[in-house]
Image (tube, rainbow, N blue to C red):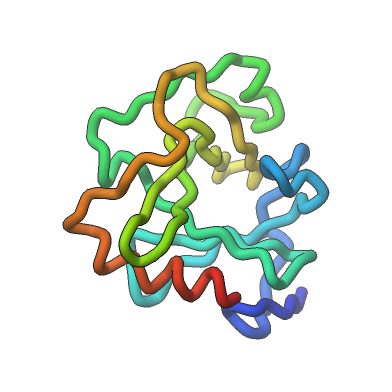
Length: 153
């Protein structure tokens, strides 16, 4: 499958590389198929690229790489669409946003990816994590160019 994107140009993806988000993402409920694209210049970032809207690419990070105490409580009902089974590999990621001087990540609404079933969802955690958690200053410089590029995409 070939898709045209603003950020990556034309991508040639196999159907088994895509993630299905049955409920979409918060604010983008109609976009259900996404590809997870590693960032070639920043290994701590991956991009969630919409298959149907080439202008939609969302930078994601693993929050535990930056916030060691990050834990979330999620109800079983919220996890139902992921079809989790014992031994399934689950990624917990958060969105990155902001500008070069002030990058934040949304720790309250993580993106969950079941790698085995290629299913994803975004949930609102029961914890009191902030929606706009400032990124540690030590990572701001290396990540800031990604978000500036995202706005232009």
